[in-house]
Length: 288
Image 1 (cartoon, helix red, strand yellow):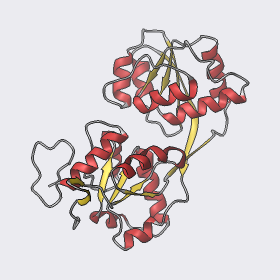
Image 2 (cartoon, rainbow, N blue to C red):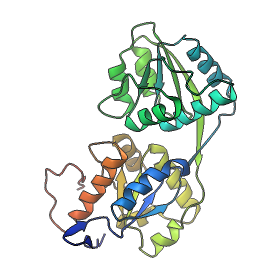
Image 3 (cartoon, one colour):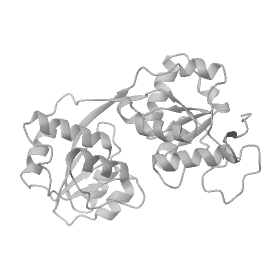
C-alpha cells in the first residue's frame, strides 16, 4: 500500500487518521459508536453493514429460558454480546415483563461493551467479566460449581467453546439461539470506492463481520485481492483467525479487544507507515 502521510489538522498536532476513509462493517444499530470514535480522530467513516440480526425461527426455547431465569432457576446468566442484551430486552417486553425484572440475577459478560449494554438496556450490573474479552477467558473465570445452572442465550453461529468448557466444568448449561446473524445491506459503495483506491482501511469487529463481508463484497463484484492495498484491522484474535482463514492479510490486532483499542491500533499503524516498524510495537502485526 502506498500510504499517505499523516494529515495536519490542528496547529502542532498530527492526526494519523485525519482524512482517511475507514470502512465500518458493524450492523447498522451498532455502528454509531465506532463512527463517533473515528470521526473524533478526523477519519471519514464509510458505512458498509455486513451483518444484521433477525429473530430465531422459533423463540420458544429462548422464552422458556427467560421465564426460568426470572423465576430464579439459574445460577448464572451469561451474556456474550450487546446483541444478546438487545434481544433479551425485546423478548421481555413481548412476554409482558418489565425490562428491569432480571435485576438480582448473577450476570457474567464477555467484555465491557456487553456489560455497558446490560446496564443501559436491562438495568443489570455485571458480576463477572474476564480480563481478555473472549469466550475462552470468560469460561475460565466463571468456574461454575458442579451442578450449577447456566443460561446462555447466543447467536445461531456462536462458537461452541464457551458452552463446552462450562459443561466440562460440571455446569448444567442451557444454550439457546437468541438471534440469527444474516448478511447486512445498504451503506456506501465500497466496491466502487475500492476500485478507485479511495479506501484506506477496513475494520472487522467479529468473525461474522469477516465472513459476511466476504459474502457481500463478492456478490457485489468485489475481489478480495483488492484488499492487498488496504489496511485490514481486526478487533481481536478470534476475528483475526477468521480473516486469515479467508486468505486475508491482517495488519492490526490490538492487545485491548475493544473499539477504542482498535482505533488506537489504526492510529499506530498509519503513524508509522513508511518507517521501519519497531519489533516491540504491540499493535501492528508482521508477516513474512
